[in-house]
Amino acid sequence: MVNPHDNSPNHGPLEKLINFSARNWLLTLMLVLAGAFWGYRLLITAPLDAIPDLSDVQVIVFTNWPGRSPDLVEDQITYPLTTTLLAAPKVRFVRGQSFMGLSFVYVIFEDGTDMYWARSRVLEYLNSAAPKLPDNVRPTLGPDATGVGWVYQYALVDKSGNQSLADLRSLQDFNLRYSLEAVEGVAEVASVGGFVKEYQINIDPNKLASYGIPLHKVTMAVRASNNDVGGRV
Image (cartoon, rainbow, N blue to C red; front, side):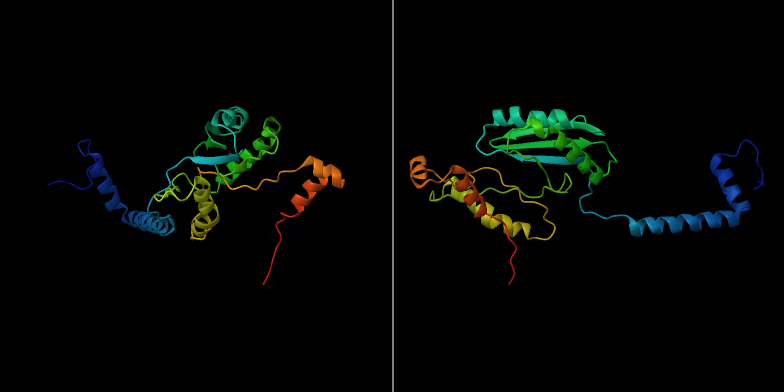
């Protein structure tokens, strides 16, 4: 007959655990109830996502410099920003991409870094990098979104041949973009390619001289005609 209280060396760890639980049933019951309560609490508080966010903590820096070649964008914008942001604390590595008139810099931080803290550090180092950049070039931070947030990519194609690249880009910038940004949960609609619509003013210096109008007054008049003002109904 086997004695359940026998603590001989022949008993394995599982048998010892069973014997301990049987002798201390009240303590075992309390531990089981505590574990069940903790598991239930984790179940109701744990975030449930269809696609878990396993991406790195990253901050995207976007810079627009229209009309410049990728080589010039790389030399004047992407490289200075990359070398400056590498010195930021908790940065693992920095990747840069240069396109026609566009620069993207991806700053990857260490795991566990708070996203808002990381964005604040990037803003600080962008301010220190401003003197290295061309005039009128202002880098901006990308939206507060994760690396798995890029859910859809599309292209506008005119099979009839009646629309130019400038027309397609205008359709994207002034129609499709705002419709998509109005969808709940959309952080940004990024447009790449085509020709951005712009307005040019060709000044005749001879006529300015004949009317006695200095150039800076023309500049001020153009700026005054393009102000953003609030409105109401």
